[in-house]
Each structure stands twice: as structure tokens, then as C-alpha cells.
Image (cartoon, rainbow, N blue to C red; front, side, top):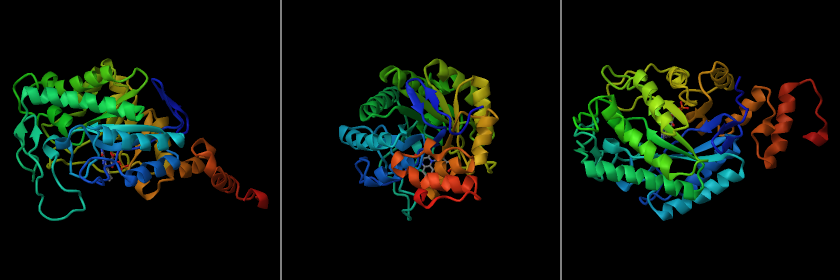
Length: 370
Ligand SMILES: Cc1cc2nc3c(=O)[nH]c(=O)nc-3n(C[C@H](O)[C@H](O)[C@H](O)COP(=O)(O)O)c2cc1C
């Protein structure tokens, strides 16, 4: 049985527990893609909060691949140096720093969610086919040369990520962004070698995975986030996700991070606690590869049950950690584990006392321990 607080090793990387911070865009750069103090506090608060893995938000591999002009980038050295400072701070708390490398394709070039008003596109988007996402401009269909250049940009981004010190690199293949746009028959209408059947539609993500794996050290973890289903009739399916996971495992991908949706405005998501966990379990079982589960996992017992039932190897949390950055420590206390499994030594005294009180409220805690 995998305990939420048991270590998890992939290649040369050991996470101190099975809890990860899911990538979350902060839309907080100054139009240059350089991570700021906001990103530093956002990521380090959550590593201090006890998560074994902290994944930096979708970081664009080229400027046109950003969702908004305020996105983080990883296409130049100034960005890399700012990432490196965050990585060092995360590692100093005992967590492992990861990064998601991304290209938004036809869903690029919009404003941050809290910037209201008309969506004024900042640049022309490209995608596998000239098929717009609802409400967005029609993208231009990528040429062979643009596909090759984009794969090369993922490789350069992965190398810079390694240079910054990241030990876990996740390719963003979910949520209707570029790699997912290639995989889904809804957004990929090509009839060349980059579209058509499963083989053609998954070629882009497989080539990115192969090229990135070849460019990073053996001991660095390579992850792929997928949307296991489009939640649309005639779209990308869980069965295809299982097959893709089998294929990329053979290419050196170590873990699949299983999300869903985001490709088509007609999606009908069956929302509820742990709603994407069945997808994670299907990929884990069908492809025999470690998986991360994510999506409305909010309670410690719920997270533990997912691991106990063999549905996932790692639990990623997003929104609950915005409310509660110290969730892993609460989980340790609630599940009766020693909170010091998650806590940096500087903060041990605060949580040791709480754990004692929680575990046996009848025990009189001596004054000197408080
Ligand atoms: C503010 C915010 C930003 C997000 N940004 C990203 C992102 O950069 N990359 C990504 O793959 N998912 C992103 N997501 C999705 C989360 O990683 C996660 O998959 C989703 O919120 C479901 O998990 P939850 O129910 O624990 O929030 C974002 C979610 C939120 C709330």
C-alpha cells in the first residue's frame, strides 16, 4: 500500500511524500515571461507547506505559445535565471521543484482571466489545423517547418529547465493546448503524417517526448500531462490515452499526469470529487506506468484512499492549496502521521504540538512543549 507520506522515487529523484502542487498559471509576469517575486512566494509557500513536489506553472517554450502576455516563459536565459532562484528556494525546503513546459497553440494570445473586456488577440496563433476554439480567432495551420521548430523549442526549454535546476519536467499535453490539439480529432483535421489516425495525431507529442528525453539527463524525471478524455462525442478518448501512455512509456516518459477536457467548448464534464481519478486508474492499469491523479481531491482521507486502492501513485492538488498552502501538514495530522515527515525543521515545533493535541486530547501537554 502506498502511504500519502511514503517517499516516491522516479529515476534519480525521490519525493519525500506523494503530494504535489499541480501547475497553476499566475498570469503575473511583466510581458517578458520572467518569473517574479509573486511566483517565488506562491511556489515556496506551498513547498514550506509540505508538498513533496512543486510544479511551476505552464511555462511557454516560445513567446507565441503563451496563453496571455503575462505568462511565465522558459525560452531565454533571463527567465532561466529567475527560475533557478525559485528552484533553489524550493529545494531548500526539502521539496522537489518541477516545471511544466507548454505551448498554447490556438488557445494562446488572450488576457488573464481577471482582465475583463473584449478579448483582443495580441498575436496570431498557430495550431495543427485552421480550426478555432469557440470565441477565439482562427489559427493558422502549422507548416512542417513550424512543427519542427516547435519541437526544437520544447527541447531548448527542457534544457534550460535542467540548467535552472528542475528535477521533474512535465510536457503539457492537456487542456486543449497545442500537444492536445494534435491528439484530438476535433482540432486536428490534417491528412498528412501529423494527423489522421491515432499514429498521425499522436506523432507530435511522441516526437516532443522523444526529443526532450534525449536532451535531459538520465536522472531527471519526464512527465506528460494529458486530458484523458475530451468529454465530447467523437473526441479524444480514455482508450486512446491508455494507448498513448503505453507508447510514451517506451520513449522514456516516467509518469502520466491525468487531467481531462479543455479542448472543446461543447464538453460535458461529469464533475464531482475526484472526477478524473477513473482516468488515472485506467491509464495506470492499462499502460502499467506510474500516474498522478488530480481534480477535486480536497480531503486527506480521500487522497489516501486513491493511493490505497491503487488508482494513482501521486496526488496533485491545485485549488485547495490556494486556500490552504499547509494542506499536507493538516493531512499528516489528520491521518495520524508525524507531521515532521512534511515540515521543514524551522517550523517543526508548531506542528509537533498540534499533532500531540490532535492525537490524544486527554494528554496534558507540558508548558515547555508549547
Ligand atoms: C489558478 C489555476 C491555474 C492553473 N494553471 C494550470 C497550468 O498552468 N497548467 C495546467 O496543466 N493546469 C493548470 N490548472 C489546472 C490545475 O493544475 C488542476 O489540474 C485543476 O485545477 C484541478 O485540480 P483541483 O481540483 O485540485 O484544483 C490551473 C488551475 C488553477 C485553479
